Amino acid sequence: MNQTPSRDGWTAPEPGESEPAPITAMLSSRLMVLANLLKRGAILRYKRLTGLSSVEFGLVASLGRRPPMSVARLAEAVGQDKGQISRALANLVSRKLIAKSANPKDSREVLISLTAAGLAAHDAIVEGAQERNRRLLEHLSAAEFDMLLQQVDQLTTIAAEMLESEKNAR
Image (cartoon, rainbow, N blue to C red; front, top):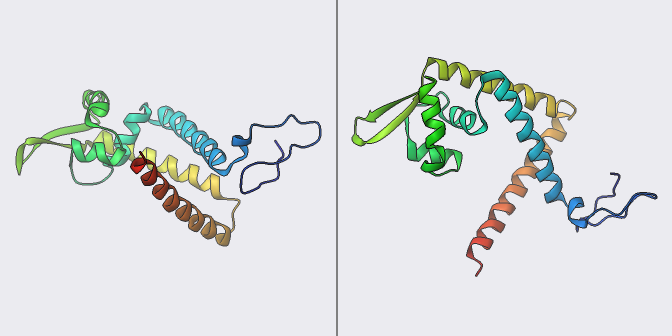
C-alpha cells in the first residue's frame, strides 16, 4: 500500500489501487498494526524457546530477577486482575517455574518468585527480546533511534492523557 502520509490519516490511493479505508492510513492504526505484529512474533518465539503461553511469559518476564512479589503486585505489573492470571500461575507452579511462599510480614499474602528453571526461562525471554529489538532497530542510525524514542515517549504521554480524558467523559 503506497500512500502519502498526512496528519488526518487520509491519503490518496496510487493509480490503479482501490481506496483504503481512511482509518487504516492513520498513525494510530499503523502503530497498532506494528504492535500486533511484534506481539505475535514474540508469542511465537517465546512459545518456541520456553513453551510458555503469552500470559505465562508475561508473568515470568515481569517477575524477572526481582525479589518475590505479591500476586496483586504481579497482576498490576502485567495489567491484569488476579483472577485472570490465576490459571497461568497454577500452570507455572506445576511446571516448577515459580514458587509460592507466605509473606513473612503478612501471612495472608502469597509471594511469587521464579525458581532456577523459571530464571532460565526468564533469561531466554530476555535474550530473545534483545535479539528482536536489535533486529528491529538495526537499520536506524543513533540519531534516528534517539529521535524515535523521543517521539514515542511524547506520543505515549499524549495517548495517556487521551485515555484519561476518555475515562472521565460521560
